Length: 263
Ligand SMILES: [Zn+2]
Image 1 (cartoon, rainbow, N blue to C red):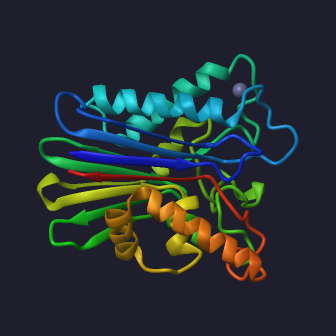
Image 2 (image 1 turned 90 degrees about the horizontal axis):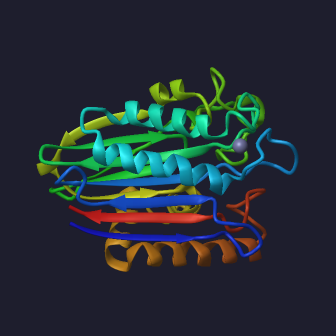
């Protein structure tokens, strides 16, 4: 197995709210990849005395530990328990019922002797490349199904749609949200490589339409995660200079994370 992980903050003025980790071997064989994108709260009260990086470090740490040590739990159960643990860590000091309580999008993959298991919640992206070269994108498309006019990003979408029926779901303080994640598994013998991305990196396809998911994975294979993110930054600068044709009201540079694993 070979793994390459790159994360780049959107800018120097605020901390990187993406969080990523890879573990190998997990339970003696296979491995785990976790990628989180902390949802940036607007200025103002979020009911929490901590920070988004505080939250993602605890949630991500729990996901890595449980994915590696608890083969008896499936990934949805692991996400649920990780949310519970993280919530318990700040329940005494913070209002976890606040709509803006710290939260994150999730891409999680675990592989072992038999299968590659995967889980995606909100706008993180997981790509699975088959041994035949075909690329399958695991996407939670709830954001795409929001009413027209909603900004299609977990970071910017209207608070009224956040973690509500008919809206979209992120990992916040409610363990039950794990049931909303897109999950599945495929035989490990059918997978050549995988990539996990936050939306700051997947915008190469989703915002700039430079190529489809297969083309993105090909770029990552050839140029590495750093090559993908460098290209995204070039596209962002060019679009900003051209009047924000693609970026519109979105952030020029978002935190961007890409993890590429060859099994
Ligand atoms: Zn807190």
